[in-house]
Length: 60
Image (cartoon, rainbow, N blue to C red; front, side, top):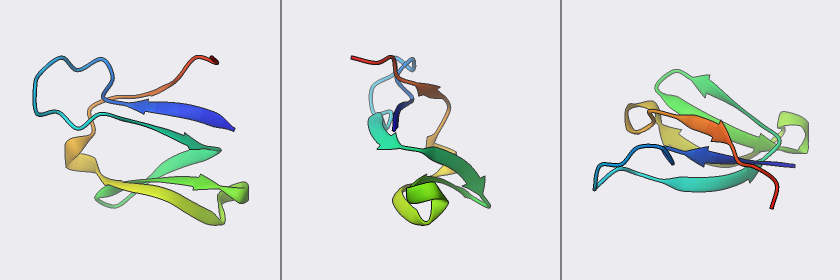
């Protein structure tokens, strides 16, 4: 499973930052939704207005 960094490269304070472990993600209307189990289980939902970048995190 991959890890995705949300807004990691954004330097301003007050910015929502998070790392999530998921297989995939997609935008659904006004939200980004992260999934596991082949897209059948939602892991995280984030309002798109709070997301500027989504990057795949390097393996640790």
